[in-house]
Length: 121
Image 1: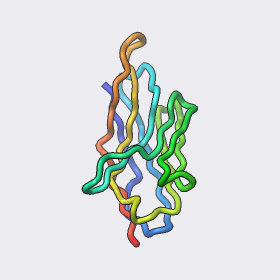
Image 2 (image 1 turned 45 degrees about the horizontal axis):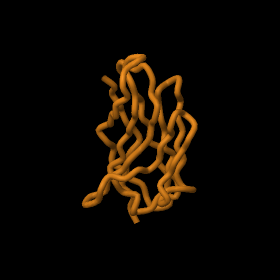
Image 3 (image 1 turned 60 degrees about the horizontal axis):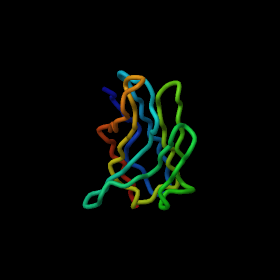
């Protein structure tokens, strides 16, 4: 099993910044993809940013240019630097990874519990 622990959420004024961090632990052979999703009340969960295989990065159009995702493969951590935050960024942000626990096993998705980000206007 792989556990994901998020930190860094909170309340910030519009235009401010927050940094989210996520650390993976447990029985990990390899993590292929790490990233962040978010879900606002009444909305579906959406991709925010993701790093595939440590190199390929994708951002949601709504955050591109404001958010930066980074990953430390040695520490199994992923970070999301969020700048120029807007009220519409308010959501529960969840860490995600796609990982395998044994060398020749299958990859499975794992999720953190989520951390609240609230941006006031």
